[in-house]
Amino acid sequence: MQRFSKIPATIVTGFLGAGKTTLIRHLIEHAGGRKLALLINEFGDVGVDGEILQNCGDAACKPDRIIELANGCICCTVADDFLPAIERLLTLDPLPDHILIETSGLALPKPLVKAFDWPAIRSKLTVDGVIAVVDAAAVAAGRFADDPEKLGAARSADPSIEHDNPLEEVYEDQLLCADLILLNKIDLIDSETRANIIAEINALVPRAVKIVPIEKGCVEADLLLGLDAKAEDDLEARPSHHDTEEGHDHDDFESLVIDIAPLSAPEPMLERLAALAERHDVLRIKGFLDIAGKPMRLLVQGVGARFQQTFDRPWRAGEERRGRLVVIGQKGLDGAAITQALTQTLVA
Image 1 (cartoon, rainbow, N blue to C red):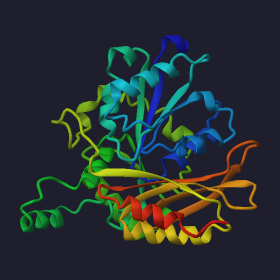
Image 2 (image 1 turned 45 degrees about the vertical axis):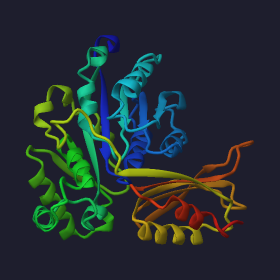
Image 3 (image 1 turned 135 degrees about the vertical axis):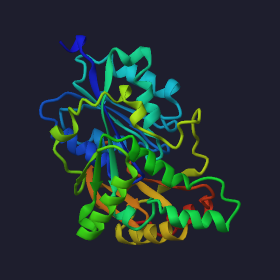
């Protein structure tokens, strides 16, 4: 019957570090018998997210069913990257029961939804739902939330401001396109802050969209998969800041890839990363570290000055043990200073 019905695809969107990869890994581990396929879009050229997902060890999604796109934001390269990747997934035998698409943290979801209306894939796939993952602690800190009054005052005081903060536009576009919003990391905020964030989101989104508070990306797969939203047929209900544009670019952002020598312990590097993130206004740091004497690789993920670490898997026999970090920030990052700060004197 699958050959005569459309395969559902879920688009998982969310800002940098919101918890998209953690959520998808949880879905893989609790797939409920579904055969999944994944399309992962990274910002930068280190396949950190793909590595995390490939090594979850779950039969629901094998490595040959994971495609990584690291050449840029797929909402900007639909024809060149996204559609060929989808076509590759449609050659799998057996076909997937469900496709999960993790966008980069800078992606706008609406162009991807529009792509499902292309004749080449419309008869084969449907957008089961768009899931927006929100970092509750980051929004509470005001890093990505929009304050209309404050923005209006800034506009009046500075005539050089010609457009909204692009971070706010990306954040809002992801919410406006969503069929379900996951308020992640609620363990990092209090109940009053949670209620305020939910009220702000409800005021922004013009249609009824359920907001689900979660911790550590944990949510039932049956809640996220099977929404049957048919989002490609519902574009008018998903407004965007970029509806009148042909596309958008990410000239306001850049990334660095830095090789890190083996470390004797992780704590000094984590302290250095937190200080660096604040000093250089870094948005996101993610990657792997080699801790001398440890048989497992250390996964590090940071949003602003908040960092998490976990030993995610053993180093493989014959695998080169090396640390690599991706640093993502707004245009103008001092790459030389950041690289020097992360590569000096912390070797094992």
